[in-house]
Length: 71
Image 1 (cartoon, rainbow, N blue to C red):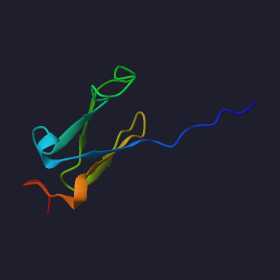
Image 2: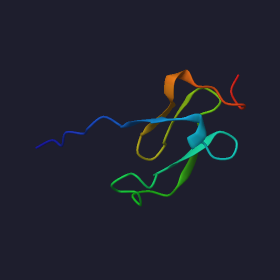
Image 3: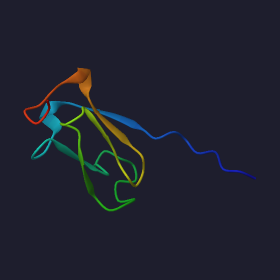
């Protein structure tokens, strides 16, 4: 029997949701299993999106929003 893995989630974030120098943290408090892995900070300001190395969740700035840290 093989397990079917669901694709990683994509979370849309606004520039106002970013912390410090344009980062989000994962897991975030809205996640069902928010304590599933250690908290990591993911840069989304530089390219507009970032991916969690633990769970694969992709964090993407909504509407291509840019922050002061983006180019």
